[in-house]
Image 1 (tube, rainbow, N blue to C red):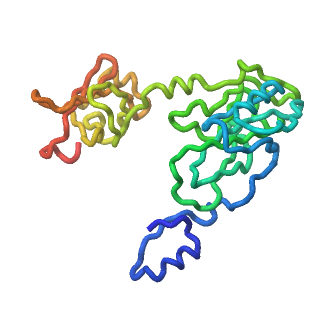
Image 2: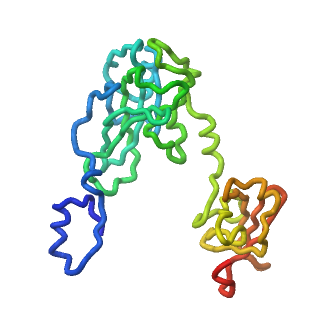
Length: 298
């Protein structure tokens, strides 16, 4: 049984229904973010604006008044812009996303491994959140003294942007610690390498599903007892080959104990099948589905 939090109140409420031992899961009370108002400042930063508007999974930076005006409008902020001392501060926009049942709060701004990011939390213990994507923009003035050495990134969190939204990351190509230093518009932008990588198909792995008839990258584990003799499960099938030795092109492409191969799944037809071919360079390996008569081990 799952509860929103393993509080004494919740556990006591379950006691009358527990005629025998039951397993209860939930968040530890120490992990629950306390409710409270939106902070207006913290160590090295202060809040300039906080509205349910703008774009989701986006960030931005302003180092001049003109850039600040553009960023204010892009974030969808209303009212007059608070003054900023660009000698000592820069402006950062966090375009966050929240589910309507789980309001969020910006509790701080931090630097982790060269990434300037927000500390955005979900107060309380709301349980499952609705999957609607609503915008919440935070504009903050950040003291130059807390900025990472340039170049650096700005993100909503210290983690890499989620799959599908590489535009969350803003790349700052210059250092901005020096009082009054600026970045041109060309020195502030998205991570084009991250965007290009997001456009490429990501390798499938065991338990994955691909579309038959179309080549797709697959990351094959080589460090198992089976080596290349078994692949998957892929599309719910464990695939088997009689090939035991790693082909030369596969060996050249291996990355430690894995190799990314291109797989092509052919569905069952009147001529037979289904079948799967894994390819690296000019070296193909044919796979068939695991049969009931095959040995359980490799």
